[in-house]
Every structure is written in C-alpha cells, then in structure tokens.
Image (cartoon, helix red, strand yellow):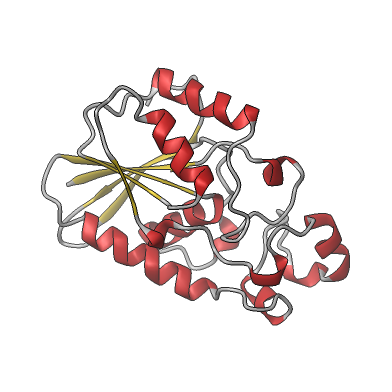
Length: 205
C-alpha cells in the first residue's frame, strides 16, 4: 500500500479575512501561516518520504517548501491539486455572498455545488472530483511501502476525502484547519482507507 498524507496550506490573508480563497487568489502565506507551517515541520518529519507533491499555487508551494527544508526532498507540483476555481467569486467576502445567495451555502458555511449558477466562469465540483481521483489512481500504483505527501487546499482536502471514502455529499465533510494533516492508505487494487483526518500540532503523526 501507499501511505498518503494530505496537508492543507498555512493561513493567508484571504483566509483571515474570510474571503473565498480559490484558484485565482494566488497569495503567499501570511505571518501566521508561515508560523503554522514551521510548527508542523517541528513534529512532522518528511525526510523519509518518497515524494512531496504540491499544488502550484503560492500558498501551498510555500508551505511545502517550509515542510521540506533541510530534507533534500525536491517538491514537485501538479495542477490537479490546485484549489477549485470559484470564478468571479474568488476573493469576495463570504459574508457578502451569503447575504446575496444564502441558498448556495450549507449549514457549515461551505459553498454547495450549485453555486456555479451565480459565479461566472466557476469550476464544477464534479470536475474537481475527477482530477483528484486521477492523481490518487496514479499514486496508488507507486508500489508498496511508499510515502507521499500532497500539499494542497481546503476544498481539495475535502474533495480527496469524498473521493477516497466514496462519500455521497461533500457537505458531510468539514474543512481541515490550516496546516491540518490527513492520512490515508491506497491499495493497487483500488481499495482506499482513512487513518485520520485534519490533525493539527502538537498531535503525533
């Protein structure tokens, strides 16, 4: 089996300001976000990982660089791990959008799939599920006892959980906090297992 660790990036200003933080809000980590990544590195050693693959967006790649500092591991990037593209809603205040379109937010304040009725040039959730499933299928074929870290985003972490565990409704999945870590096992024959979801420091990994 392949051990896969899913890591959400550290905090950005758009996270702090509670704005939609999608593919087009390509911002670096803020001070708190860099601190979160450094705290995670202190308890989560990536030096024995076979691969570290990051979303190409700055906030994820910067998180990956901090986590692999002094490990000798080269961070790869894969566009399939980029955050969902919320189109014209990217960067917009969540509070503003909720006042205008409360029907496209679930009970936990996350966007429902039909938000694309209102957000121009937005990405369909089904397309996101397909691209993360594609990368999971590739990783599952790497061989036994491989360890892979994927550094990505909040919705992508939820989408990966949905696809791995075959959950019918993504609204059932809470978003991990910044620098939260989830762990799964992938078998070559397609079986997938959850070990834990959204852990934060100083818990043991």
